[in-house]
Amino acid sequence: MNHIIYEGTPSLPHTFEYTPDCDAEMMLYFVGTAYTNAVGSKIGLELVIENNVVASTSVYCNSSRDHQAMHPGLVMYRFPLNIDESSHNIKPVSITIRAISGTVFDSNDYVTVACI
Image (cartoon, rainbow, N blue to C red; front, side, top):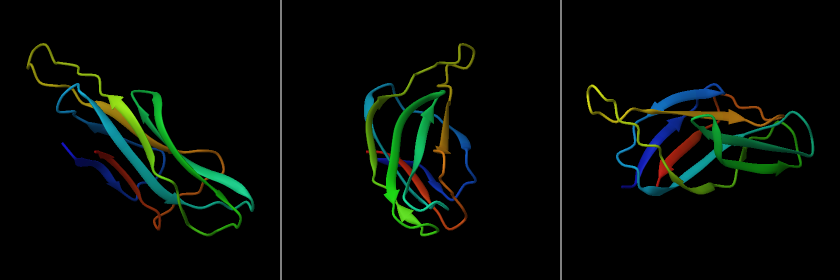
């Protein structure tokens, strides 16, 4: 069941919906790039599912305005399986990608979220 949930260069924060296949625990992989305008600071991204931070990725930047790849974030996660009573279909969950304070994300940066 390896597949990409999201990849792209969104404006942040970016919220989208994902419909899980099942309620089994799976490993989520989360990685991205970004930069900072402040020398010697940490940049990072958070993966938020249904208003809960479930994974984050970050890197410490010695220089400013240099796009940096962050360390991959890995987390075991069980998506909530909400069934629509009338259609018996699985309802999608809300996923948000957001930057931590001091992180700048532009059209040159990229984010990937995947189930592995």
